[in-house]
Image (cartoon, rainbow, N blue to C red; front, side):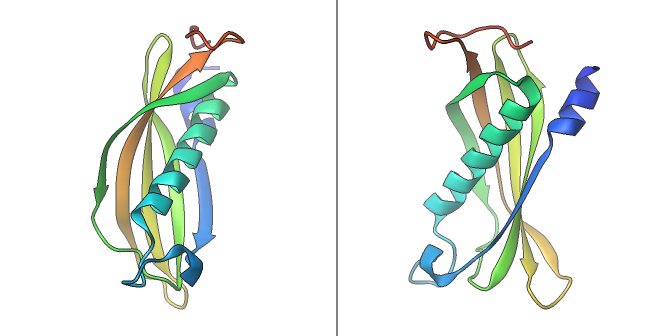
Length: 127
């Protein structure tokens, strides 16, 4: 399978409702919760692309462009943006959707770097 086809097939989309138990005193999603969800989507995307054991080695700049209010739906979208020998990068964007309208906007973006590992937790080539 060609690299571009693998990238397309490994794209990952997850939707979540933002409930009050995940929000701070401003009634918006905790930044740490957003980052946890982003890392999870990035991990799934990396694993779907490589079909190997993957671990997060870094998170690059994460930009919080808009607050994510309680009572909205969020879509997390992950896509491979770079492929190295043993590592790859995944960009994750979070979009906000209003529950009762078609309004949609990007709220958060970030990149995560993953490395493929073997049974001894040593880096191995991504196949």
